[in-house]
Amino acid sequence: MQDDIVKACESLSIAYARAVDFRDYDAFVELFAEDGVLDVGRPINGKAAIAKSMTKRPAELRSRHVLTNIFIDVVDEDHARGISYLTLYRHTGKQSFDAGPVPFTGPAAIGHYEDRFVRTAQGWRFERRTLMLAFRNADHF
Image 1 (cartoon, one colour):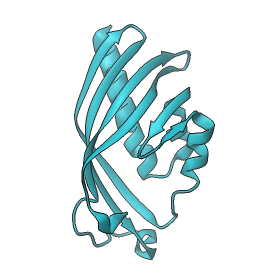
Image 2 (cartoon, rainbow, N blue to C red):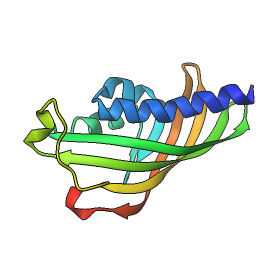
Image 3 (cartoon, rainbow, N blue to C red):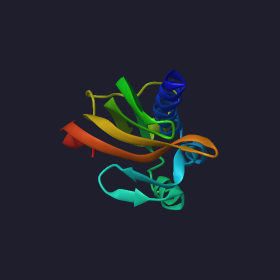
């Protein structure tokens, strides 16, 4: 059972990156528990508030969240915690609408997510995801 929990929580982290980068915000919000918290600089509490926050992402923003070193610690059959390293690439501008690659000068930020996971009736979800930056390129923010 522990391996199943680890895989489910790892999958949540990967789904998070895919959903945010490809603007599948409905799927993104469903990764969180109903009262889940997303903290990427300030806490956003609950799925409704997380959904609203995603509508504020600029249309001309292209991002890629590269997650590595994903580690999951199973607390019990309904709770787990984890960490995943983030290398974030971003471009903001009209070129983001182009089909091809856009110029970049390196990562926008490097850090990690600290996660708490909870089993819900819908499956494993983020109870809380907190971003901790170690490096930040001011040109991208």
